[in-house]
Length: 160
Image 1: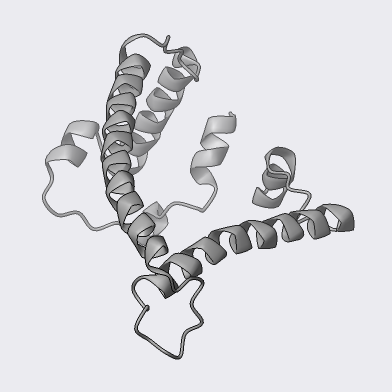
Image 2: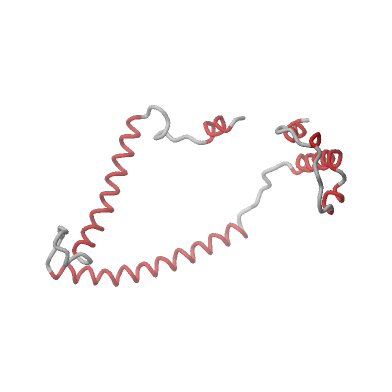
């Protein structure tokens, strides 16, 4: 199977495939509206606090109560960030522990088939390049041109 065929079989995304114009329009509009909902409060806050003395910037608010409220929330958000960070770290550690200790682990391959393939590959290398002990302990080895592997030679070996 070629990579394109595998990608078609397992990866589907209507947004990037041909057609599906309503999906593309809808998801693009939702993304734009979402980024606007992120950008406006950030601009509002930065323009009225950090850039309060800059006359070239249009300020969302100029009254003192807004700045006081911002700096009050500043402390609140710092504390909330610390608490959320601690909860996320503890949850990640707990989840990793559960995955490692409690979730059943299943073998995703056929062990007998793997042993057969390893044996075939070791026999093939032994015939082509010498025995395994020789291959593991030799410091320098020059491969003759007729010993070079064809691009699909191992794949053919596994098919037999």
